[in-house]
Image (cartoon, rainbow over all chains, first blue to last red; front, side):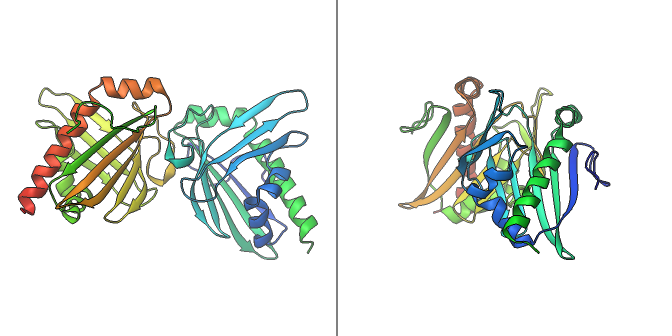
Length: 164
Length: 164
């Protein structure tokens, strides 16, 4: 697994993760789109996720609030931009629910795609930025470690629910 | 016509214009969605509009470049967020085509709605901002004069094309 660097073919301002996840696509989709399941894998443990809004439609609010064991926290308001059932979810920190502009501490749009591959699922997360500085800052904050850990947690949850 | 102040009921961070335009809705829709017509009314004359991108679908690029008679210019990249034929167009300066984050000089999302009213069309432009400072800066730059002048130009163009 390429967990610590950008996937081949990524555009300069993007951070891209390609993973082959050993779980069925429908199970991953459910773990992504049911907030009660999402909160179990959305941030690296022992941090916890509170899902404050999850309106899964274009322009719907997507807001998570993360808490760390040391009292730290991270507030992440945003919105869904595009939802293709079982296949693709696009969300951004640039807008809030109802398309209102946000003032993000980390400006990005993420496109997550799921596709069948063998017995598992090809999981691709493409995270786009406005410029190189913003992309590099995201990487330096531990993007690859963080997002890959979450995908590990997603895979573990999905296999627990649909062993195969 | 309330051309110089916010429409009643506007939320605190919004700038809202309500106009009754004396032209059929279908004609206004065409003048909005055909770039060759859009460029005739999009900015207050004698400034001119170059339409650099007009991909009228969610996530499609919407990019205009304006030029003034004194050599001034204004570059306005953005994207469409939602398109409901004959009824509503939502666009933003916060994202570019393909949902990539932008670095806007004026962060906003605009929702333009058209509805039949009598022999004409109720034209509402709701322009949303992230905070009060951004909204106030937009107003101080001449928002109401500018947008209302453009709607006057749109009305004149539509009546020329579909007198009634």
